[in-house]
Length: 233
Image (cartoon, rainbow, N blue to C red; front, side, top):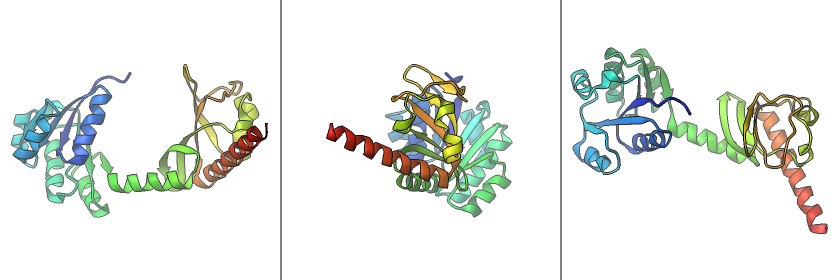
């Protein structure tokens, strides 16, 4: 398990609270900060560590102990000026890694100029991931790496079951690389060529979107043939 981290979350809106829940589930400690008293009081019923403070004010952040955190997330995406000032204040206090939510590219550019290390576009990223899910039937958890290039989790083709990674020839057939095989009892990163593929495995494959689509079509066709054959029997 990754080492436990203490992470500061600025803004207890829907995104900020969802982030805190996810971080808690991963075993990390979080401190949530928001300037609105009602928002803080509502969040306090779910989270222990929440503070009412104006994150655009460097002194207020200092009093809250922001300088003691190595990581911070500025979730004030709808309040552009506030998110920029909060990011600047966090960097002045020496917070090493600051991620900030942006509404658009202009907002993102301003955040970068004041020191944001990572820019996130939750709405855009969610829409892109949904589009990939719809386009790649049969592929799960598709993650965009760059424009037109993605990582996806998938079941093996029925014809691959019982074959080794080498015999499956995913690279020569589909121009895809298997970067990880998740067995029921263990996970193999960069699997060796002789590793046998089972029906319960999950494969993590990486490649161009056009090649992932070819694989998803082949998976659907093989699964339909296997189902039809089972019905005949």
